[in-house]
Length: 330
Ligand SMILES: [Zn+2]
Image (cartoon, rainbow, N blue to C red; front, side, top):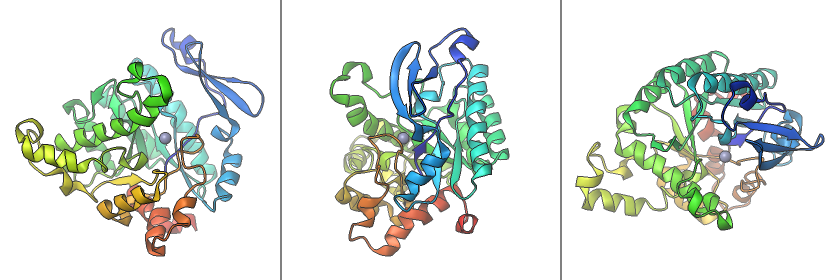
């Protein structure tokens, strides 16, 4: 339920809009392309980032039939002018919607929306639903503002009303500039970002006010679940700081949101299954990026987990999160 895809060719948005450092793809050959950001090299990607058939074959190598695809967070463009972010979002969403139409049993699509403008975000959310996408992927912060801020509430309300699922993905990691060495933004910043998003949404009361919202936190919820004891203790010992907008203990929300399985550690996955229940843990890969679970679910398949638990992780949890029926894929 957590894979990234990008169209093979992107417009030169920086040139078109006349500002910014939007991602552009420089193809080296048919096999690799360099993501360029404002003329600077950002990341080299391979053909499995855009080639729909290679992706299907690589998934079949690990007995996985369906991919939930969304864009790469660097494409969010939350700091662009709203109209430009709308244009980019529509381009990316149309690409994914087309893929879903052509391969309905292989691909499920999540949209990206202009979170910097709630009205525009809701319009694109409605449009995304109308073209067959079943949810959205959003960042763990929006231009460094937390998801619990009042300005984002109407977007979450619209997601609940429309039945659109939400995946929260870490990005623009806190402390990025001060810890670039050793890949620390990815190893330390990303798990913290996801916990930041979960804490902000819980403490601000979003999950209390919108109980039907279907949210999934990436990378097994980042550091949120492993540090929940500390978070709960903070809630109890300093309610004057923590419980100011929502009086409900954060532990009460276990099993009310989803997380993916990307832990690279069967013991941690078991701990998370104990907290969340198997129906709230979905098989995620972060494909096709090397920090993901590139042997899609193999460590789960080879574990001593109960087959019914594995079946939940491999299919049922994701279907319930997205509000889809297994029959659609048979
Ligand atoms: Zn990812």
